[in-house]
Length: 236
Ligand code: 5GP
Image (cartoon, rainbow, N blue to C red):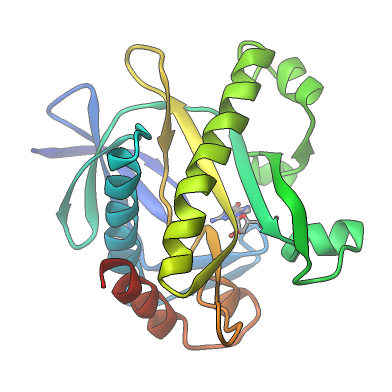
């Protein structure tokens, strides 16, 4: 597969065209950003870890009937993916209150939610990824109709129902995570982006230790060791 021109640069990945019009290569970067880009750093090897973790999780989800853009891992930092039109909604799934949910609504940090919460954020850095309700999504024409919003929620819940017990068997509490979806060449909505400690929160089930990007956001250190441990537990 030939890597051709750069088509998009995000905060954590570069996207390249290939010699196949329906396929792209995602290159995972070592860059770390938080607070909408206000805090920046880089951690050698972080991109490769996220590529490997996402690869394992996309494969596991496929075995459980969840279609994604993942085709194959090409090398340490590069993943071959189906080309999709990204839906500009960040689908946030929460099992435990923390982060912006605790900050915005005063729900105590660490409180187990009575049911899994699915929220939508606008994928728009210039606006700081604000919260969206269904009507906002329709007014902004981020989806075609309400049925597509219900589909996004159903897919997000299905993914959570697969990932949460999987991580529990690995001694990790899947606290919350962010998903992105896109339309493939047939117009079908499929899972896209990545699933990694950059966009999930994992807390060790025994110690409560944070094993995700909060180590960077909160200046806790030990980010790479935590990501390595997540990968080790996933494949172990
Ligand atoms: P919160 O809204 O509490 O900041 O984040 C909720 C969950 O979604 C966390 O797992 C967080 O990592 C993820 N998340 C929310 N927004 C973003 C984003 O813009 N980029 C990334 N990588 N993850 C996000």
